[in-house]
Amino acid sequence: MTNRERAGTRERRRRMVELLGEGDVSVHRLAAEFGVSLSTVRRDLAGLAHEGRITRTYGGAVDHRVPERSWRDKEGVRRAEKAAIARAAAELVRPGDVVLLDAGTTVAGVAHELRDRTDVTLVTNGLSTLLELADAAVELVVLGGRLRRPNEALLGTRTLRELRGITPDLVFLGVDGLDPRRGINCPDHEQAALKEAMAECARDAWVLADDSKLGTGPAAFPYWAALPPGTGLLTTAGTEALAAYEEERWNVSAVHMY
Image 1 (cartoon, one colour):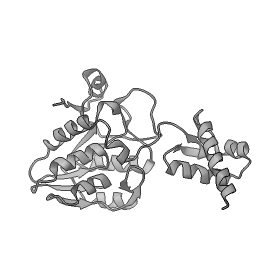
Image 2: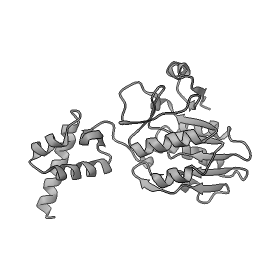
Image 3: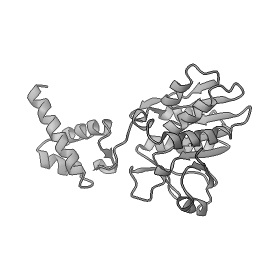
Image 4: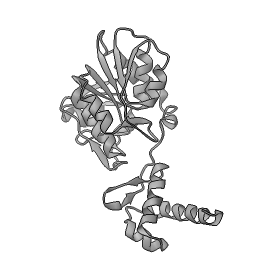
């Protein structure tokens, strides 16, 4: 590809992002708008989705909402709240427990709290947790699968297959967004399926979410992971935000900062 062609692609993709900011746009409309083939549009959309600048939806349409951030971007945000939730989660872990740790920065905080425990086994699909525990004393099992970026989680059919051979005592789930009725809001359908499987295979499932994850605005992503009745919620959110979860019979535990 020549420099001129590369510049044309960059400019076309920039204009696509602007159009998508106005709402869902079909691939046919984009092809007509830029005078290119459907395959070129799909290739552009795949590139933009990989960069986290858009979210793909069913039927070839796209939805430009909140860009998905990498775990490196997230780890410096709301550190005090995440640390408090991680400490509260670690206190739930008993000697002899097998603990399943989802991907996510708050869940990686739980891994940090448990890194010196020699009486538990940790199982994870999260790269941030794996890095946290690479030189730790705790027993660690890593689920295989395809590395999904930018959240750095291992997922896919292999991950689900390996998960079927485990019955954890606890699972701690990370979230980008949470709804009391619909469950965990996910940017990827495989990610949603994996979170559902994790919650179902464990004896006790807990969602870890600071107050920013319990917003009442429109969903950021198109997919949802439904959770079993009685799923636990460890959060720094206040009483008003938690009322809807209590009405839906979540096992809510408010975490106090200290």
